[in-house]
Image 1 (cartoon, helix red, strand yellow):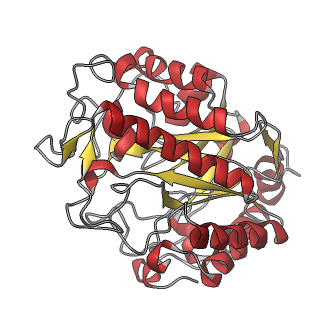
Image 2 (tube, one colour):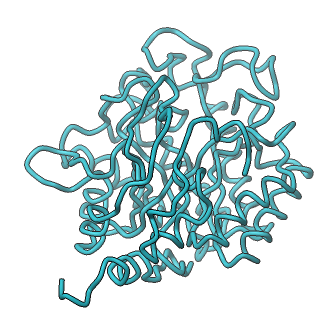
Length: 375
């Protein structure tokens, strides 16, 4: 770095670069990570939700990934206040969200979600619906809910495809499929929650079949140029040390079917973006995904925070802004393509612009109390 290559110009040069995902042009390398907020009564996002996302777009975020949204399956979710991505009222609300983000100069994709056996019986928009999963097991490996039949699998695959088609129809810029953190798709991927003996269980390649079939159905339901992003993680809620892949070869076995099915970009979720994924190499999970697939990658994990995960929900009690030198180092070597920012963007809608112009000392620090309002 030369004497004239200041922190300001370095951030602008590296984070401010445009990026393309299957024809979707992003103005910079900063994304807003999906974060459940539960401010959509009866599953319908209102004007406050549109304003919330539009503020982050106006604040410089290149790509917004919405909070998780329930697909059209009775067992998909456990809250009346988490938005759904089906039904006339909810889709009308989401259309207004997309329009507001576009008007502010941003791009936006919904995260499509089914929580599987994370849902407790009696919860959610359809309380009588059973909790479902690949083997009727919770994340602790104990019996919970209903083991999905072939018909159940087909219904869920169709629900994801229908929501993806709706996203394109109402003006979104792509979709993200939530395959991380121990929810339904990830429950199929993980050996602790998938004990099936049919074609959807067994070795890692077979456990990937459900996810790959969802990707294939989504890819067929949308235009070829409509980006499909897949979010994955090793860790699960309450199982931070979980591993789908213990080495690069296993990770490649997981990724290859998804890439072949039509994923355009992978969103690799880690709790701390700076930690290496495997021994013997400094690459984080997103870096390994990019190396193994050649696909576009988004990384995420405690960007802009100085306190890590505290408490059962993984939220820090309080946090202040930290510098991004380590992030810029990784961006400079193109370890991954886009960095997603979570709680720091809840705290300060202008975080992206401030990062790009070396004003992180002006950032409003995150506090868990901010989760009680949509600002």
